[in-house]
Image (tube, rainbow, N blue to C red; front, side, top):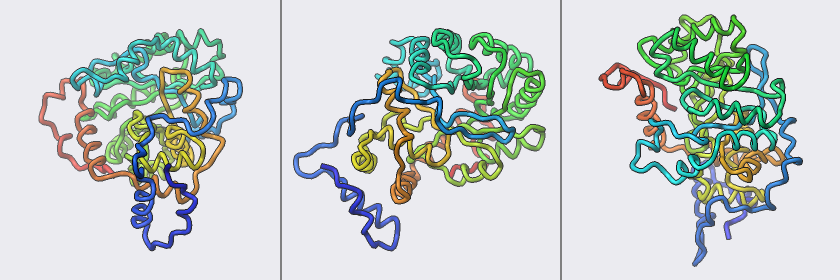
Length: 374
């Protein structure tokens, strides 16, 4: 069985790296024991819907005074897979994509709302906002209890103000609401396009269609460029955050600016559930690997946005408020990011800045301009 982390507190190594080495050795499977299968449940089955109490989860306060639950429900690849989604570009997509296509976003969102989720993370790119809106209507949850976020996609950003206004109106109609709690620039499209788009969002905020403004996938350099012309400080920056892509320099910068961090891929698409360190910490707490990753995120004050098309996983993912990770465990998890992960992130970032726009065929300055990846 995996070693108990409790004994590791007694280690006297002078450096974290040596402690990490000891932990890695400690959790290696011995003899004929193999690593547990993904999503192995170390505790009792997920609690019934009525016991989750997600209406009382902690909230984060924005720099404009508005509040948002620290946990949300992600709708990316729920019932629909965008044509240019990363896994769709790979040959044959993935088995997870096949499962996502086999379900209805309407049904998934209704189930999530019934379980207790109140913050729903949407986007033009996700291609399912109409189904999301129907699911929310089916749930019967009053609008005032919901927090709805959406994002404007690169193609619309590139096309300019008229297209942006038209898309915002479409999102409002699809989600059956007359305002959005948060609306974000999905990617900082270069050549000044993202700055122009943000200024349009500022105007829409004044018109009452948007409560708070935000960003997604912004590097420090993108933010500084934006703030040369923006008159309203963005409230959030949604980026990938998990122990295997923990860009501390970037996160610290935005937090000092008063910009809250939201995380997508907090669960890393399940690819870290069988990591020996995650498994060991999960075993010690009687939790699942997903719950350890989610708790790490919440404990850092980062908004946690898990996604699943299965009701039992929706419940499991949300059960991260009844335990705490120790400082030692947090340090261990903080140190999981490798140079390869940062390099992979940089390549994807440079590609996605112009994804689905005419700029994708150009050898532009965004391919080699300096950018903070840490």
